[in-house]
Image 1 (cartoon, rainbow, N blue to C red):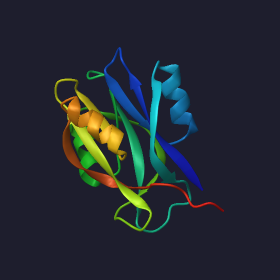
Image 2: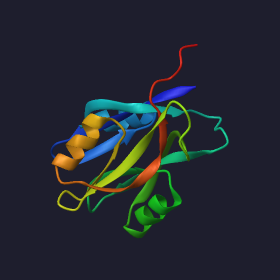
Image 3: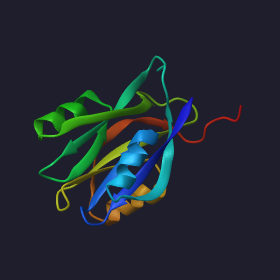
Length: 146
């Protein structure tokens, strides 16, 4: 029902990637990314009303992975030359109890996007010169115990 949304980092590429399912985690590990931390939890299929898919994109020229859930984010990815790679889980499109904002940050110096929901990732992004672009959606902070 839920899948962890995890941040990974590749120091050679200076690239963050946020994974939304096991397949994406395996792709990140195989490409030399190291696990950083859990940002929150995604809904898995079937999606609920008021949710959007978190889409993973890749830009070869920038060597950048980026994930987007908003129409604005997806349109900006295509216009910047990113190609769609995969679909992870689902985010809420508006805040509901138990969710936290999933922020999109951008670093022009690194040509890198990063999604951040935890204070540690938000602080790390800001201290590295990333700027806040938008809220991509809302993720579950902690899934409820069954």
